[in-house]
Image (cartoon, rainbow, N blue to C red):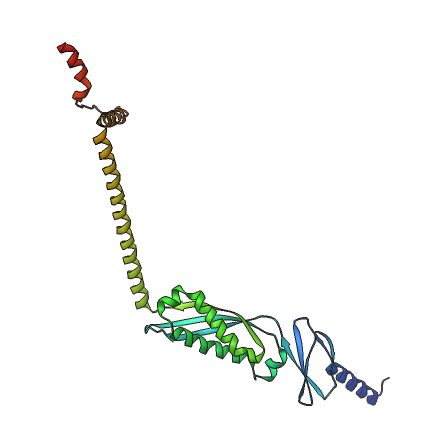
Length: 250
């Protein structure tokens, strides 16, 4: 039978050991403070702390995917948009992420929102829709530059969705339809121009070689003759019977 005093001692020993021994995963680091002073980052693996003296803060080094809420943006050409994005970042210096900023997740989120509004406000609508990769790189560069003192590396920023007003969508649809009609007319005109060039070349060939007309005539007859359900009446070219007329005169 264990006495109450021994039980109490064992309880406190187990409690102290549980608070002194920590196990960190491969992707975790522990930022250790001893009496309020920064000791450094430790881990992964088994970490032994001094009870009641050391305090450890866990920090994950994995890539964090943060969704930037939709932001109301007025572009350089005065178009109102709603734009949201996603930011990929990770902690590369655990000590700075804990010491230099109170909450690095909240700070990165707020910085991403303000930077998104600022960059898109300096761009025109056509640039946002057509040059999204360029804007993504600029966002990544600016956010990464400002989060570097916090020990955070921003690897990528992607604009997810651009919500256009209904009136702007209708205007863009009319513009796209007009552009398609313009291209169709240009293609049709180019086809007519090329056809006229070919007809001109054919006319020159026929002018230089009159027998080409007869060959074309015979080809047309063969095409018509393939349809057996019709009667065809055609004139005989005088050139075909000229040799017979000359023989008769002789």
